[in-house]
Length: 318
Image (cartoon, rainbow, N blue to C red; front, side, top):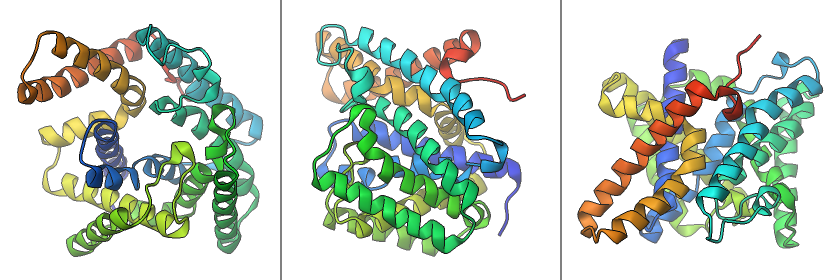
């Protein structure tokens, strides 16, 4: 079943919106089983989606892609890193070394890893046409990731996470046509959800930032199943609840993932400090925490998008 171009973009944004909200939850104190489920696919989904919309035909040369991503990824990375360091003044993240270490424990690691993964993907996508060759490359990337993990190799900008991240990016690229066109039944979506939940509790935790893929192929397959569930769920939400309040919020979240990724942990930290100072009751504090969090991110994103678009990666296509 095919969907319109507009709907395609909407369901992708809703998928990203659901996942970025799960990421926010995953960085808070939640029960371990829920945390393991979220971590089993949440960051792989962002790389997978980037692969779905990755087009080697858009860039005639590697240098054109490189220059583009300098402005859309690395400039925002430096800007957000400086803001976060200043915002965490006096705490563990007040450390300029994090800029090149790759932000261990903070979601900003995703940006340079995505940049390097796209640079690595370029020759594979540009010069390898056979599907079997692409699958072999994905397997080799997974094996390289596991080898780096076994040797406990840690590099600047989390380069050790690039093979694993690139494997999800490449898989999204390989499955782009199926992903764009296929709309599943409700029963198959529910089965995918149940499989993903069960496997996430059995398998070791997946942590792309730390290059941890557990049992490798089972963890990898489970991540793809989780991604499939979220993407198909997003299409159903748009089909049955067309642009209601929830979908509007998910669409906004999906279109502003970079801001949520960059600011959620920082803003959450200071909101918790403020709520603790006023001795806010736990239940009320929990509600206010998320209300204030997303209001503050919304204001920050509006200001930056309107007045400083270049430093947050918003550049116009020629």
